[in-house]
Image 1 (cartoon, rainbow, N blue to C red):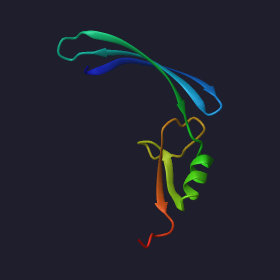
Image 2: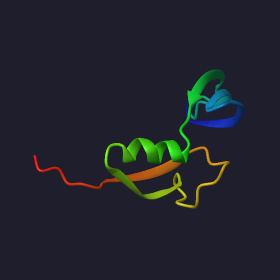
Image 3: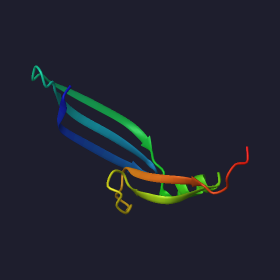
Image 4: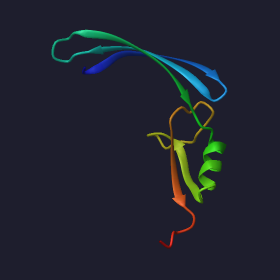
Length: 93
């Protein structure tokens, strides 16, 4: 497949679980043939406080958290995030 002509994502949110349904159309660059693909899967996502809690329990601080690939500020609509973690105590091993 070369590229996707159309992508439709339907998200149903319940607590911290999202049902993601994708309806994709792919076109083969060489032949021009088009295939239709459907996918549905359930995803669990973490909130920023959960990430901070889980990492801090392992002595890891978060010097940076931003929207993935744009490095802009996170907000409630952010789907993909980049979180940088740094160990707060150096291991002596």
